[in-house]
Length: 282
Image (cartoon, helix red, strand yellow):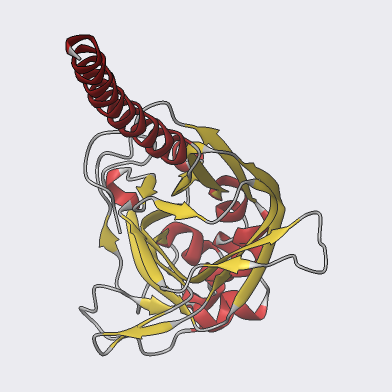
């Protein structure tokens, strides 16, 4: 009898130990599965960057550049009957303080539904936010009044612009211009919607930056002529208006608005091993 009791006690202990061991293994497996699931998530951080600020033409100085983006669209390259096109749902606006060399805007990261290769498109579209109308593409800046005067029959014999718009003194940080150079302010605010398709990119498991790049050097070089023409033809600009002459109609009529800016744009993905510090811009 004693032997039977001892065997029963030993079996009970083994069963108890086995139960504890199984609980530990199940817990460990669950944690591993959670880690694997997290590591396989596709995390995308959109980033928008402008390039070419240091090579702007001498007769033009941009102070601010704004983009209103209503959608980023992802279309699978290998389309099947079950293929799904994904797109962002919340519009957003990016305003670059070009005057102070702000070149990059980074949005908050989001989790993408699946990995794969996708064709990327964006839609620029005007929107009204808090009763403020924002164009699909907006811009403020200064154009050299010397360029305007050289093409204007109203210019005086000494080459100074004789009449409206009144020139403003230029920021002295532009070393290539003399201190007494005169500059005329202008602004641009397009209401035109533009849908632009980039090349395809590979979205992989893990964190990555979806980097949109806008090269404004060549684009800006083509802006001086239509802007100076708009300034010449403006008969009654508001004196003291900080934004100056509205050149929207002139630029849109010659096709040097949002469409031309997008022609110099590209997109690529950049893997991220760690999330960058600092505050995300939105």
